[in-house]
Image (cartoon, rainbow, N blue to C red; front, top):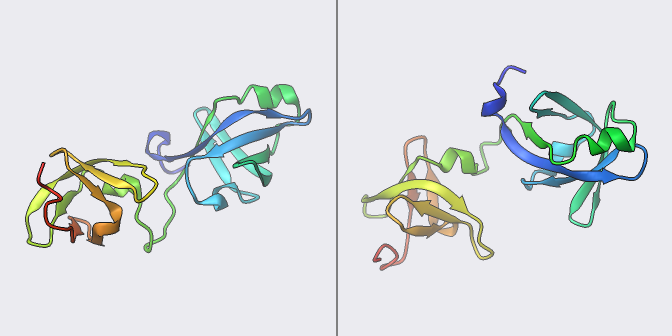
Amino acid sequence: MSVPYEDLLTVGHIRRAHGLKGEVVVRLSTNRVERLDVGTILFIEDGELTVGSSRPKDGDFLVFFEGVRSREDAESLRGTELRAPQLDDPDELWVHNLIGTPVVDQSGVVRGVVTEVQANPASDLLVLDSGALVPLTFVVDVTDENIHVDVPDGLFDL
């Protein structure tokens, strides 16, 4: 692995064993289901796991990892965090790339720096160090230096 474990992205975790032959229930923390494609290598704190097969089940995935052959093997992985390198997709906004980036409104005013991205049913929210919340739907451009937004009047009036 060329990227240190700490720099890999958390993509899911193993919830529990399923059945008797080593299958596990995986909950993804990403919408990129290709993370569980056959042959994909996922990293755990003390090694790696290779996906042998996977299929969706009730919002989670049932996954066989190569070398996990029994319920006992699967149970030993309960709670394990699964990590992977960043995907190279320039058309996507990646949460980890937004953290620490200044937000600039349509007038050129810096409104704060993103400290987190909060899940919200209508639109995920950029949480700024100023206390402001900016729906991602107002993002018009993201550069290496700034996130440019076009927001309605009053959004930054706290």
